[in-house]
Structure formats: C-alpha cells, structure tokens
Image (cartoon, rainbow, N blue to C red):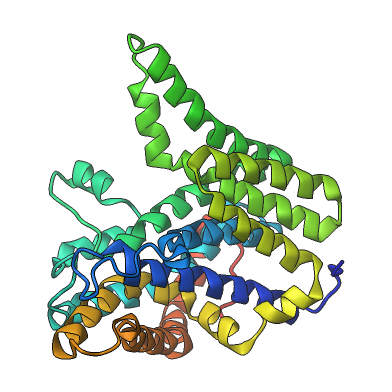
Length: 362
C-alpha cells in the first residue's frame, strides 16, 4: 500500500490526474451525448459507454472535493479562514472565465445556451443559482454555462461541512453529510406514502442544498481519513456510502470511478498512471476548462461540421477541445495568478478585519 509519507508533489500529481480523468469524461459527454439533437453526427456516438456515462465525471469531482477540502480544513484556524481560502481558489478563475464566455459568445453562433446577458454573469461570481437570484432580485437570471450548477452545490457543501467541522469536529461533519444524503430518500419516501402531509418544503430544501450529492463528498472525506491515518474502517465506511450512492441514483458506472480513486490511494502503479504528463496537465487546467468548455465545444463542433460535412465525424470535436484546453491553460498559467496578485492586499486586509488567517497568495 502506498504510504502517506510520500512526497507532497506526488500526492498532488495523482490528484491532478484524477481531475484530468473527471474533466475528460465531462467533455466527452457534452461533445457526443448531451447535445445529440443538434450535433452534426446526431446520436451516432451517443450510446458509446464512455460518452454516455461521462456526466459522472462530476461525481468524481465531488469525491475529489471531499478529499481535498479535508486537507484545506486541517490547515485553517477557523471557518472564516476556510471560506476565504475557498473564495480565493474559486473566484479569480470564475471571474475571468465568465468574462471570456460573455465577450466570445457572439463568435459561437451555435451555442446551446445562446448569447448570455450581462447580468447573468452574477450567478457565477456569487456562486448562487439563478432561481435564488431571480427570487431575490425579482428578475430573471440564467447561468451563462450549464456546468455552473455543480459550483452552486459545492459552495453550499463548503458552508455546511466547514461549519460542522469547526463547531462539532470532523466525525460529526462527515456524519452530517451522510445524514443529509440519506434524508433525501427519506423525504421522497415520506412524500410518496403520506401525500396529505405537507412535506414539499423539505424536498425543496433538499434540492436547494443538493443533498442527493452529499454522499460523494462524504466518500472523499472518508477516503482522506483512510489515506491519512491508514485505518481500514474509514475505507469500509467509504465503500458502504459509495454502494448506497451508486444504488440510490442508478449510477453503477460511478462505482468504477470510486474504485479508481481507492486504487490510486493504495497502489503506486496506479499513481504513476494517473501522474502521466497528459492527465496531470489536463487536471492542472481542469477548473477553467470545466467553466468554459460546454458551449464553446458544442458551437465549434457544429460550425466545423457545417464547413466540413465529409470529415470523420467522430473527430470533429477534437479541434474545439484543443482550443478550449489552450484557453484554459492561459487562464491557469497567467491570468489567474495575475488577478490574485491584484487582489492580494484587499484580500489580506479583509481577512484581518474578519479575524481570518491572512493566507499567503503565491
């Protein structure tokens, strides 16, 4: 079994490789299955197993988040410090990618989401879903990218898990995640069997919080404790939650992703595979790539398909994928670090004002 004393760089490398696997699955799903009714090749490749189940890459991202957030929490001195660190991690790339999406949208005439309105940028910048913003401001909001939905859920997870971690400790925090995940089924069953009892507000609350996804975060958190402390009871607890999550949502394919994650924690050979340069690079740019890829890839694929109808259709999305990866690399390598430097002073000042640890920005 791979020991926890391995080099920090090695640990980050195979986690980046897992991120690379996750974003590749999501991109393939959007390129070949999600928009089959408008793609030049229609549903010709839509039922290929890897493409059809690619959306489960989001669940892998959630598992990785549960794992990594545990590491972040252990380095923070309080909840405010944690939230500021999360904000610093997510906001700069979100701002940059939202602006890129808004200003380049007119170039991609076949965007499934259409050309976004300027005020819709707010949904990403505050990590609040369009429905909530529409209710607060009494006007219509939409996400400028469909993939943003998972960021809204992640932010709520940060608040709930972070608060529970600092107020009750990590065991209760993980237990709360599992409880919220299980409560989703309990509420649905209660509504079904007791229709006269007014429980719809609980269902609405569960959908708002995203409780049906909390099992995946719990899996990641338990696997972190297993990896860090080498106690098999945490591994078995993670497996039990994983079986429940896969069975509950009909996501059997996700079980394979859970197994890959577990193997990556235990076997150096798997770590070496995940640490290959290609996967690590894709994982390195995975966050901005996730934010901008869907509409750009779909639109460019349709436009290229119209120009080159005789080309090998399965290859049509490859050039759009290369383009969005290149843009994401520029964002990750240059634009995001530059923006972090700009906000260094106000970030540290605000952190000091609210009593959070003034984290260094590299």
